[in-house]
Amino acid sequence: MRQLALLALVCASLFGGGPKYDQALHLYNRTEYQASLKLLLPSFQKSPAELALIGQNYFMLGDAKRATECFQKAVAAEPNNSAHYHWLGRAYGRWAETGSMFTAMGHASKARQNFEKAIELDPKNAEAVNDLFEFYVEAPSFIGGGLDKAVKIADRIAERDAAEGNYARARIAEKRKEYGTAEQHLRRAMELAPRQVGRVIDLARFLAKHDQFQESDEAFQAAEKIAPDAPKLMYARAAAYIEAKRNIDVAKNLLEKYLASPLTPDDPPRSDARKLLRQVSGG
Image (tube, rainbow, N blue to C red; front, side, top):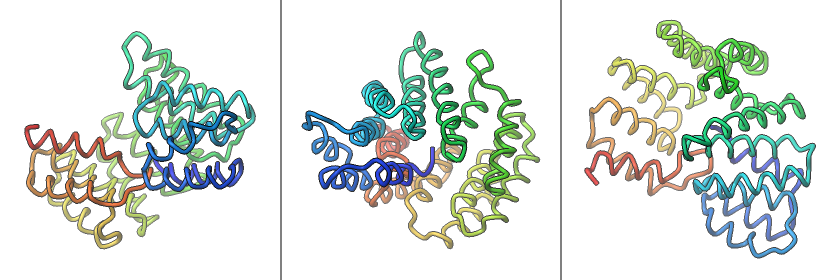
């Protein structure tokens, strides 16, 4: 999931509160989620913006149940707010991933419904469109997924952003095991947005996943020239090395550097980096 900090800022600008809220949002954007909650939770009468920010903090801390409850309250308070439905969909999706197998399908279906509602309320909610696309790609048809639906969303994404549209088509091609086509789309996305480091990372990770290690390393080096010391580049490179079981010492150093870096909600959680580090350190 991308641009979480931007989404939070948009919500704040439209539905924000006073100085306490602004301080809590600042802490959230520095990934100080517990400190942000400490400011927000004592309020007896919480605004919809505060409810949403509390939910975002819980989401980032991995507490999908509490996040869902907060976003449900935000939706009830502002039923025409696309962003609230989008976050509620994300919370249900996280709950489906981390909860029991008995509730996973129901929560996943609710994730889809809320993404669709977010887009119904605001067709220009690009992040909701992207998340619904990912749902269609990954989820089985009996809970509303399907590549036929994903293709339609990819066309919609391409109309808005040609590079993102090529990335979406690469995801579909890879799911269909059309790896050559997927690589072509990823390279085209990089050509269309040569200064977006994420596009280069997408290609580098794809190449590593398919054992094209030399080209993957070259792509990571190109990404480093665009955004030296970018935390998400450190994490992506470490994850690619670990997945391929190569350059493990380099991966460890990258993860340690990542954990010491100032992060934003757009970056992978520190908990994910610690998990990877334990995986390769035998902890």
